[in-house]
Image (cartoon, rainbow, N blue to C red; front, side, top):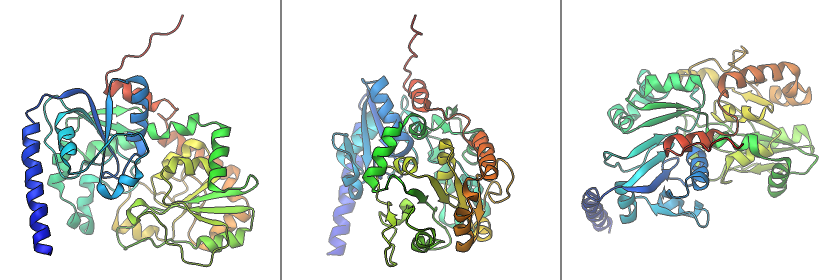
Length: 395
């Protein structure tokens, strides 16, 4: 059975590729845009915010999402999509004038003259990226740097959230693309959401009005398999008491569940499967994270951030970082720092998490990493990428 199935898949791929080569001879559709996010996991991140704004400012542009078959259930009702590797997918990739992605379009495609490709990225780089990973043997062993450079060669525009990102992207992804120092569209909601919007999200998540919601969102580790949290959410919830609720968001590499197995207190909520991390951030009174780029986005809200990093030395050694997140220097550290579960509990018990010292660190962090975010990044990007003119000022 296995060999027959393999042959069938091979033949199908060959047929699809032949059809794709035919489609490459079709004229480009000037009103078609293909969007993708997180290797075709569905509607998310900067591409989602750009798509939404383009529907408003450039309604003549038809947006279609590329999604893998295993993630098609994530697609919101009414949003057009094509399944990765299908005949409609390859036709869209061949004929779309606009391509928008925060990672890459799996399977490869031939960039045609006249196509415009916007690489939005999906975070501010703390960890080493791109060509800088060559200095770390375990990372270099898994990476195909020729493939990375070939992909970069397709970009026409590279979006940055801050000057630090621009500097890193220029070095680790060298290419002839144009910089767009315009901010992250996915962060617009942090400036536009109303108190009513936030209250509605909290109710939908089951957060009581008098509860303090803590969002625990660690990143993944290259040096270990699976989601292994560096704190026990149930222990934290028990120690802090019923006034606190802990939301746990595992990295998307680990699937749709954090796999929490301890006895539940009713004050820990697995929100890994929630479709919009931005809504979780809006609902949370504070963020607990480690090296996740979510810290840079959450800073837009000017709410407390606690860095819980018990494996900092190991992480820096195996992955490499661009600055010392734990240094305590203004601009490097976004708030209180802990390395043990007891320290984390004390940060909340003593109020250090929202102390003037933590607020001062957060202000410097925001100044460094959120200078372009103001609630209008999506509009700036859409007008630049789709060549939509700004409306003349009203008289």
